[in-house]
Length: 82
Image (cartoon, rainbow, N blue to C red; front, side, top):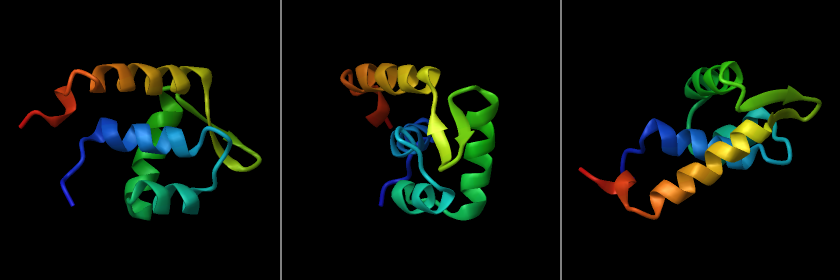
């Protein structure tokens, strides 16, 4: 598997948490380990892209905006340079 950029992993986590997701679902869905998940979840929470909910974690409006902008930039193929 090709090494992914941090932004790719953040996007994956935010997509998984659109309707709420527990940490286990995020770990398996984003193909990361629990230690990595702790770091990413902490960062996404501090940036306001993710919030804690009754179902674990949920993507905020700001997080949804991140996903949209990321997808727009991906159309230019910039995420596959190198």
